[in-house]
Each structure stands twice: as C-alpha cells, then as structure tokens.
Image (cartoon, rainbow, N blue to C red; front, side, top):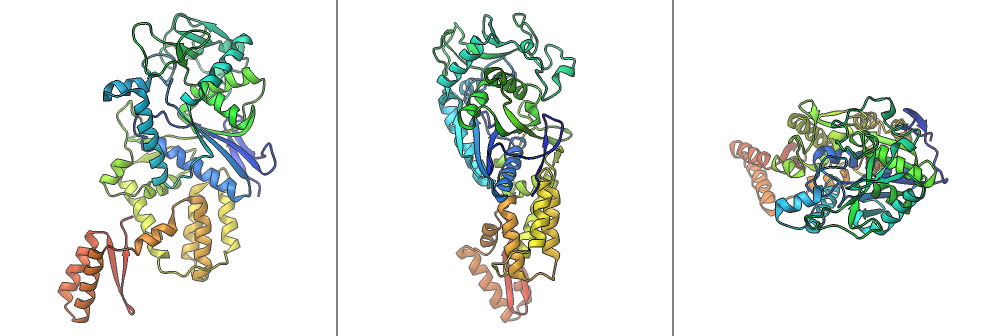
Length: 461
C-alpha cells in the first residue's frame, strides 16, 4: 500500500520509501525526566505509537530509538538558566540522579497505562557522554565551533541552510525571544554543544572533557544517539512542534555538519494539546497528567481515544467535558462488542478502508470513522466483525480485548449485589431491584434486563 507522510522538511506529503527494503529506522524525541509528563507531552507518544504500529502492520520491521534527557536541558530551552534536573533536585532535596531515576520510571509507567509499545531501545543521555564528547571533537576539528566563557558553541553561520526545517532563515529573530541574550555569541541562533561547569559550586552531573569539566548541550544527545543506533542517515525523526524553533534545527545542523549527510529523510511533528486556547505547558502552569485523570475516574485509554479523534497535525483543545465524552464513546464501543463471538475471518473490505485512512498521513479520525461504520453494519456476522475490530485495534492500541475482559470481571462484593438483584427480580420486588440497579450504576456497573436474564457490564474503564 502506498503510504503518504507529511514531511516537515519538504513541507508536503510524500510517499514513504524506506532506505532499506522492509526496514524502518525511527527516532522519537523523548522526555526531559525532571517532572511528571503532562498530557500534552503524552499526546506525541500516542501518535508515534500509532505510526509505529501502522508501519509494522504493513510488514515493515521498525527499529525505534528514544532518548531520555537526564542532563543538559536548561530552563530557557536554549543555553541559559539552570539545568532542569539540577533545579528539580534542589527543590526536592534529592540529587539529579535520583530525580532522573524516579521520573524515568514514571514515564515508563505512563506508557504502559496508555498502551504505548516501548521503543526498541531507551537511551539515557548520561549513558552516552563519551560518544557525545567524541562528536563534539569532530565538530571542533571541522571548524564549526568556537569557545566562550561558558562553553563551546556551534557557529550556525557556517551552515548555508541552517533552520531549513522551520524556515528559521526567513524569520526575523529577536534576541531574548527565541534565544537568550549572550554578548559572546557570534550569531543569535548559535547554540551550545558543551557547557562548562560553574566555578562556584559542584553540579550533580558533570564530566571531565578536553575542554574542562562540564556537561553536554541539550541538542547533542539526539544527534549522537540517532547516529549510534540508526546510522548517519535514517528514515523518520518525530517530535512535537515545540521542537521546531530550537531543538530540531540545532540537532539537524550539528548532525549534518559532522557527517556531511542528511540526518533523516522524513521529519514528522505533532501539534499542541491546548488548554483554554493556550499551549498546555509546565511553565504556564496549565498542565494535567495521568494522576489528574485518575482523580476524575477517567481511564488513560479514554485519553488515548480522545487523542486519536483529531489529526496529529491539528491542535487539539483539552477540556474535562471533551475527555468525559471520549470516555463515554470508548465505553459505548466496549459495550457494543462485549458478548459477541470472535471468529477467525476478517472483513477485507473494512480492513482495507481502515488501512487506507492511516496510509494518508496517519488519518486517525477517519480510521475511527471506519471502525464506527463497521460496528453499525448489521450485515457483518459477529465473528467476522470482532476479528476485524481486534485487527484494527492492533494499530489503534485501545486495548479492546482487555477492556472487554475487564467489563465482565466483578469483585465478590459486586457479584453479591448482582445476585441480590437477580433474586429481587425473581421475587418481583421491583423497588429493591431498581435500588440495586442504581447502586450498581454508582460503582460503574450497568445492568440490562433481557429475555435471557440480567446482563451486567462494567462501564468504568
């Protein structure tokens, strides 16, 4: 099947052609592990999980690398301020290593809750320091770097097409807006590849280097890791649109300066998750994470379903009402398929229509529409319908099989309430029967009276 992907680099949809037949090298910018990932962060990982699942369904073997930024990301998103890990460590009364270990585990737990497949390899920035130093040495030898009082900087004027990814060369940049003020920098777009440790205190994370004690710049790790595990040039690089002004142009510049080759053939970026018309961000104090969903009894999988309802290149407005509606929609799907028999034969017509939607730049809203169309088609036998739905869900990742299983699993206390209601129905005690039905509804169990008796389904995911 012809797969079209929107390539940020060319600013258009292009047919995807892997470098090696049957194989895909995929790099995803991972989290900076200094706090809980917010829902805006997690939107990206859901999107790229669907991309990976889809490519796999098309018979492509995907090698997926994701970095874990545990050093070097400063509070300005550029080259000034405190390291985010060091700052969090001070606040919590711990060291940066402890902060990183804790939030790496939180992130991995979040991925499991959202049914996101892990990458082929997670790589911590602090595990590749030697390789990062060697990379800086290559850039220095090639004449792309200069030294200031606080570090080694990349001279962006030596790259003729610097910023091509985000059309930065056509933007009138003002110092202090996109970048911090630094009188020692030759160009406002220049960026640090290696920062010197401060002289007045010792950092938790710092290493000896040919230029003195210090730590890597934020952009360096992605250049190094992608090259280590995917080669000088690989297929797809993904990330959020927040990486377009700074991180990705800088990463691309240093990678292509070091190798003389294109870093990635396809660059894909997801849009923001917005809250009250503004970007959901930690700095603005407008963030929610999976613990906030738990407090409101909303399933992480309902958030996944919510994300898939919008195209990844369109901003998505977050509200609790919208998320509750998504949960209701997912519950309705589970309710619809619970109790149906599973067959072995899939419906090729619907499956091809579903795959075609995703082959058009990962059009998940259209793919969900095909799923709904199949659910409503009474001409398809249950066995074939269920086999097709589960095949679709291998890409959507809504974990429908387990949700169906969960919808029919009850605690001993819940089973006792259901038995009491059954007895009340037999005794024609309609008032007690209604009271028990309301009680069951309050704990998330829906009861339907059928000719074959009462049918109970858990509707709190």
